[in-house]
Amino acid sequence: MVMPMAQGVELGPKAVEKWFKKLPHAKQKVTKFHFYFHDIVSGKNPTAVQIGLANMTTKSPTFFGFVAMADDPLTVGPEPNSTIVGRAQGIYGSADQNESGLLMNLNFVFTTGKYNGSTLSVLGRNPVFHKYREMPIVGGSGVFRLAQGIATAKTYWINMTSGDAIVEYNVMVLHYSH
Image 1 (cartoon, rainbow, N blue to C red):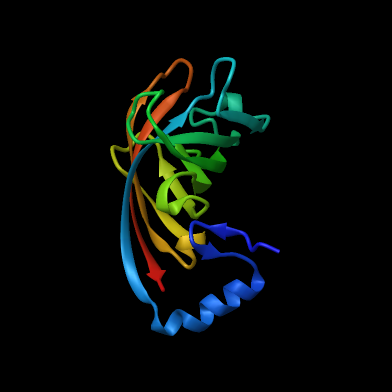
Image 2 (image 1 turned 30 degrees about the horizontal axis):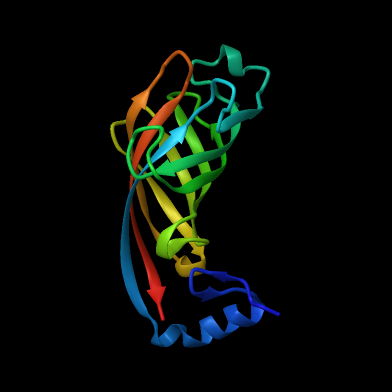
């Protein structure tokens, strides 16, 4: 039987146990990423769709209670046809009654290159109209087991009518290298 791998990292319970045993000897490494997140909520092929709406959401200036599921492309550049390096998959929702602030629960799933098959997990607050927003990286898988770091978001483009947006991300992540 062939063991599944995430770009050179063996997967499965025995492989994880073996990885943990080597952890005291592992080196910490910092990896930087820069990519664009394309959140398309309109048109024939949206990448994020509404999955929840509270009765009061339409009356709320911040759309409090709105929840969406996303499978957004992550690309090298801001252009819609730019090379895809991964996907942002997860849930985000309006969690602030006073300003437009989203709770983001996403996995950055890398689909190319040396991080193919590895993920980073984001869980944090995204006050969408602030110039810069910091969200914690709370973990990962594959190459990024036990990762921690910061994802900094900055809106590159937004269509206030449709809600479509392109967001620039700079990610700094601390992880282990065996």
